[in-house]
Length: 502
Image (cartoon, rainbow, N blue to C red; front, side, top):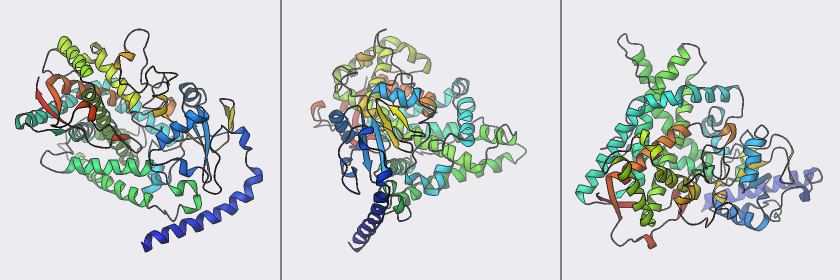
């Protein structure tokens, strides 16, 4: 209790000092009538209390009240929130140059992650170099095609694990199983090893660590809204984020140094994985990649690739069990196109439009990032008839856009059919701002090509190799479909389902 009182006292002291700064600058502030509409801010704290524990939901309700572009005063930080596809296109594509840089939360300054992470770096030489390497060396179609056998082996291992649960008559934690597969798939692609061993708790610890990062970075942080509090870290968010980062760094350091030792030997045979590719690039001076950049690039890939892919497949399975008639349609398509109890191959996906539609509908209702990573306005600009001041934080509410009744019929219903037919060719590649789970513009998620392949293979194979039912006592109508907010959107209660022979 003494510690809590101390923290509260420090916050009050810091906010009081900030108040004098606010009052001193009040005359220079932009007139409120020029900003987008929004709730009236309270003195000092502004609209902080409007965020709640699920900011994506709170901001959606405010947009329904004030319009598709709103402004909030979060402490000293002017924040503009966009909740319509038309205005999202203005930010992500039309004026991408002005909004291309991130507003960096204090949490990502832990371990100087912000100085190396492609997700948070401004558009400078280092960011361009990393982006070029991703596009040309790591996620190019030819590279992904050459690594397909790895993905197939990992999906087969997932099916084998489900078979064990089926023979034992046990329910399985779908999210945990898919996370282990995603982690091993990525670690094989990067290091040619499995990081999640079946007999260990590695996968569970990794999931806990990565979710910890997602939760801390996505959490409203007083240090972001009152800069004077950054050194105090009153909520302990940056300290906890550093702890999680260091756990992953220690593993990455070990993997990289082991590889360097092996490469010094005369009998080393290259593996052609991502690590060898980056070390070759560095040695051949095609790009000057230092060890810290390599380490943080892998950190980005593991954090972004495992949590997003596993959460998407878990949500898709939950929606299908919640809507059994759609599950039967999906299985009927798979049986007709590739035959029962077979793995889905990447070459099959183009012939499975209903499977594709299911995943698009999952992205719409449960976007990978409910609030796209925050942008910073590089200049004063007019958007939607209002002024966004230079330096303002700009949030795009992908969760609200996916539920916009002006765009989607019956937006709260899970209806994959909305994505079928020639009249609806909406893709998730950032060109259609009605569906932007991976963002758009130059800051769109670079791992999208791999992520899309992974989720289709895992979901399609799970559906085609097994029938599924809920645990005893649970029926579709009573399923817990509540959300847990972070940078990504997880199920509040893990999905448990019983596999049966199809």
